[in-house]
Amino acid sequence: MKIAISSRGKNLNSSIDTRFGRAKWFIIADTEAGSVAAIPNKKNLKAAQGAGIQSAANIARQGVECIITGHCGPNAFNTLQSQGIQVLTVTEGTVQEVLEKFKQGGLEPMRAPDVQGHWE
Image (spheres, rainbow, N blue to C red):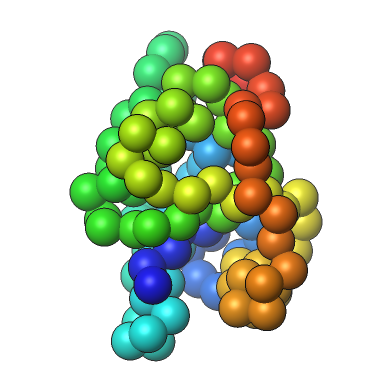
């Protein structure tokens, strides 16, 4: 399964970024192949609007089935849901720690957006 984790850095030791649309990086992990790749999100960091939608579209193009992040606004959440991408929530830890929690089934699915649009 391909999953994406919002991250403050580009490796497994980086802290997760609790912002989805304005995360600095997305770490894409393929749990079957054991591969990991870092995707920059620089374009959306300072976007006046639409950061969540654009980030969701970028994630969908990577072929992920699940995103792990801290918070997700309504536009991003709806875009992810429309692409069949499950949103899981976590509030702290490194990418590696979060990946292990995912593998153990220890993360909760987000059932609805939990912040307003344009959240910083």
